[in-house]
Length: 204
Image 1 (cartoon, rainbow, N blue to C red):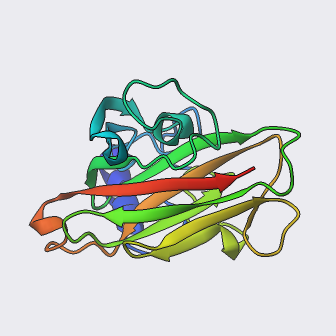
Image 2 (image 1 turned 45 degrees about the vertical axis):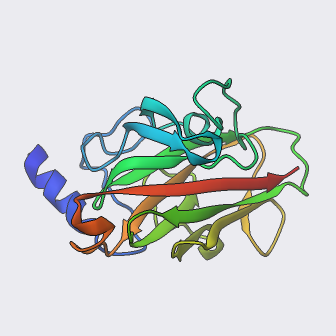
């Protein structure tokens, strides 16, 4: 049963713009498929601070990724540390990550931010979707999903109400869902895994 579900789930990752699980799968506590398709733990390098490394990081929580700028600082909840530039190492070409965060109550409507994508060793396109659902790459608002190449910005958000970027509602839980798009065997110098950089920039 698990093997069949995993194969179906892996196949769904090949198509852009969908939800990567169905309610027939075994789910984790945060509603994501509890399988190897989701990158739930991994190593993170912060290249802007002397390539400091955090190992075996829980990738299911936003603050564990963008709440740091190096391997010695204290964790900061969403929106994290401004300018944080984590590189997710050994990220599988058919995997996805889903990092949960909470928008605090009382945050100003002028708060906004975005992510920048940098890939190493000729990586493929990257898709980011912000949704209240874990693993959702087809959010109701199309402003909340975008696909970009290396050196481009995406995943733009702003506290609602707004009509330009992905609107986030205060005192609400969300996920940053991310995956590589149409990754080819020759991508990432022919390796089965890639190293992807996703910096976060915001203003309050």
